[in-house]
Image 1 (cartoon, each protein chain N blue to C red):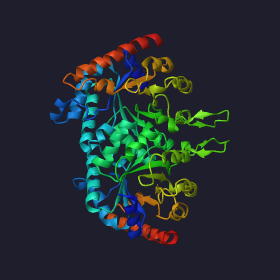
Image 2: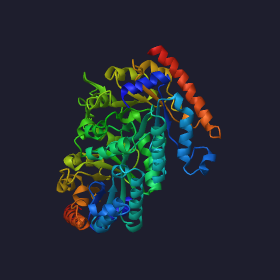
Image 3: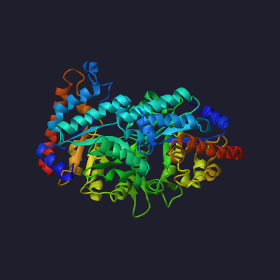
Image 4: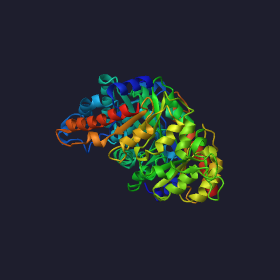
Length: 278
Length: 278
């Protein structure tokens, strides 16, 4: 998907919601466990119930790998279903991969060609040759971890570099400034946690045009209004993710209806924010 | 596997060789492509030919994921074969995973429980809660990326922190110093590339007792003698990896024999180094 198409979808659907398919087999409704592929059946019903309120889905590979090859089959079926039934959805493999060049090429092929996701999340620690292979596929994206929403983000990402000097920077700023040269705002996005919304202003001053994938709204405590206030640009420029708050809103037979309600609530909030800021 | 067992295996086999099963479907001998599972068939023959000369095998997940669920089946069969036929082998899932706490727990379960690897490589960028879940399994290990062997290692890992101050550090040193507090030398190792052998001395001064997983010997240009000189400790403390140089030594019918020859060559060099330094 191109950036232009993504922006058009956001405007048409009045939503910048990404739904995280962290489809933990231990949390999906009990009545689905009888089906042949419970995780796929769960995802299918969640997708059917929520697709009109979101512009993106983001399966996190950890929740599939924990089921071994069977989990990868669920993942394959899920992305196949999305690509077949929702061509206007931006798909994200939340895989946080990254390795030396020739190995990153394999990961890029796995997610962007074989599974045919629009994008994949990438860890930056190994530098340029670990990220660039993800940028070599037309209309596909690398989403680089910059400032994550977890407690451990403070261990390394917010280390101050050159503290006593004029060019002082947090490590996550250094990651953005260096990596933004490897691609463009047409094939790179950044992960920036909602729990650090005030830092979005600084990030916007470095990358005014890039899309940001923002986890951490809801369960992790970030505020949607703050994210829009500090992070939105003239094309919206945001994909805000919610996982557990939507997909596990109910563990009963009504899980899909409750997921729809939660997704619609967020979409309604987002519609107001889009009208205010765009 | 415990550290004690690993050290005993190294002394008994006179080897600290790890063989990387980067079993690229595009590079395995043509005659194997007829078999039901070419990648597993390749791995099985490589393992049978080389196991007496090494103490560890390291499948890199990228080369399996690029085949989708089918690749994960090859990976499951490979680790199953290793666990069944080579109980004295230290197995490494070279997966470079890392995510927020509850998600890293899923990855840890996937590799250390479901697939039953002894260890998994972990990317440190997301900090403590992304690494700790891998440390909660008895006799299992997290192998944290510190200083990798690729060109991109210079982008962030060798950034100088506090350049003007007394406590100046490279980022990779900061990663080691902080993360070593999350576990012990009984459940944590570090990845340190052979292409930076002289830096091994500095690393040894921080972590004298931890095992180091050293890629980059051979194809990537690092010297085994230098790695031993700067990195070996009284328990050896090294696992030196070779992938392509062994498994793709020949692309003909003799691939397993040639792999054995290459593995034996390295083992012979390692035997001398062990006698010199231990």
